[in-house]
Length: 227
Image (cartoon, rainbow, N blue to C red):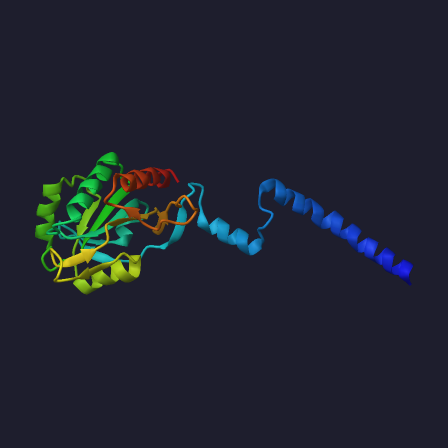
């Protein structure tokens, strides 16, 4: 009986070696020895050929621009675009964001596949007429840069629930509103995209106040335009 058991065990080991050892060796060569099918699927979802993370679909929206034209996320279909939340009378971070966005505009000026959406969080003041004047003041030249206004609560929902970029009212701060200084990057298919930080984690959004953030998003816009 013992001899039969040894023969049976030897047969199982032989079959295991023939079937699985080559697979393990192949995974070691490719550096994927710890990956299973589920992990492989997650990894494939994380990065595209550009190396940029796919976070998920950007929220749908429909607003009015500085020329009183109805603009929605469908307007940007097939385009790479950047989204920011701001307001024209902001006394603090908005002028910096606007200047940096103008720099981004100028780099891609004339490219029909690039656009910008600047959404006002003070739409009761920022009418189309006010946004038109503001656009001229800061140097908006691109026909694909839309400064958008609409219902305030609707816009807050887009910011806070859709993009998860904080925007709110606060009478105790200069200007009466608070918001993040971040830019969201959207690809041609309408997905939020970003790069990884040095630890391999997604940054989610780009710093719209620092030159390093502008440099990073500019590099990644180029990647997505070529994707």
